[in-house]
Amino acid sequence: MRIRLLSFVSQTLAHGTASPPALLALVVGAVVGVGVGGGVSCTLAEEPLWGGSRLVSGVAPYKDLGGVEICVADHRLGTPDTDLAGFCVPRSTPARATCASDSGCRSRESCVCGFCTVKYCTRNDECGDGRMCDFTLSRCVSKCEDECDCEGPNAQCDIGMCQQLCIVDAECQSGEICSLSRARCISVPCSSDDDCFAEEECIIQREPRTLTEPTIMPHPDGGSLVVFFDMIHNGPFERPRHMIFRAITVDGLSWTVDPAAPVMEPPIMGDYRAPTVMAGGSGLVIYVESGDGTGILRATSTDGRDWTFDPTEPVLLPEATWEQGRVGSPSVVLGADGYPRLYYEVGNGAGIGVAVAQDPEGRIFGPPDGGDRRLVLGPDQVTTELLWRNVTRLRSPHVMLGEDFEGTPYYRLFFSARGYESPEASSFGTVGQIPSNYSIGYAASRDGFDFELFPYNPVCDRIYPNSFVNHGSELTPAVVDLGDHYLLFYSAADRNLGEWENFRVAVNPPPLD
Image: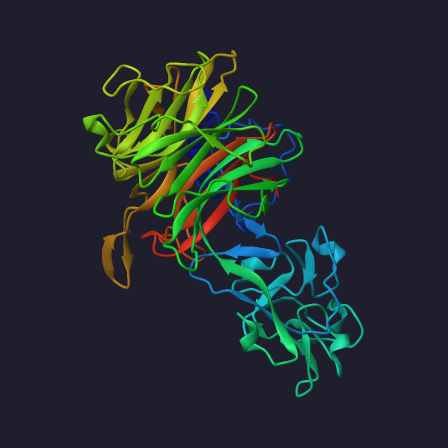
């Protein structure tokens, strides 16, 4: 059995598959005794890490690196189901120190959006390595086994968490106050000054937002990435509206919204959704979904901050019968022939369509039902009998133009689709089908019209910790090629899209750790 599995993997790689998918990663892990999380099995001898070079394909497998931390000024953006949150601090507290990383802050502080402070949390994964969330006080704390693990004078290890003894506020760190009844530095969660004493104020750290549809491109400076994304903004006297924001990131894990205001704000009763950007002429060209798929608009900019819309009608309207009255979530790519192509979501997830521009500037696109405007992928094409069954919806295409080993260009399509990746399973004696969810798939094409599906889709499918059957949803993929690795950004949610997690990031190939 062991030889047969290894032979199967070898044959898969030898027949031109650029990189094995997550499923094969599980198979190989089972054979050599190494789990997906990196743990070594006790059934086989430990082997040294492989030190050779790896093929970087951007297809699979991907390793999830966690949630993206996004800052607007000194606030970080939380998931939409969270509350406006921070800590009460004395009004006489000195200004917070600025920082570039956690190493520039004191022992219990973190670098939160450029300022040193005790970090507000509701989950352990918000705190980073070596720290955990003290859920009682909603703060990140250092883990410890004894006092030697805790830094600073009068530090103590209490129930596995580093604490600080105190008698005055000055002995505490930013975001803390001294509790005389406990003789310890504590944090007091708040959402406004009304939650604090008169001599205190509430310093907000986190505000809830709904984020979706990122698009990534290299910054002109060459040292960072520019992200445009769709954020729902809740104004005090307005209905919630989709607006386009811009952010800068160096590592992909931490984004700074720049500017803090939206770069594209729709009319009061309108929405701008799902941006996609390409370089064009002397600046940038952006396409956005108008309303809820009523059309796709085009605008230009020289700096990515100030945009000017084309004076004409939308460049793409849902005029063809097969488009089912909706064209959304556009993804633009400059074709191999030098003409832009818009790939987009058809109807309510009915498939992926493409429209080829009739001019190099991408102002006019092919007519409906023409040869250069057609459906390129439907749910029935994605469905397989074993790995991805009963696929019902396709959403949010992301297209890149790549080159094979001979330098021939080809089109690379990432998309999100809803289907079943797990077979029936038994739970407490009852056998049933694991519910469907959204995952990310991959296809490729020489001409950009006829796509061939990756044989081991999906390429990105999360299973929650301590479970083999509880799948989350992965939507709105955006992939960037950084040479020696790829980053995949996506929107995360539960399988029913009831709990939205905002953006996460994964890397291919996975780190050798």
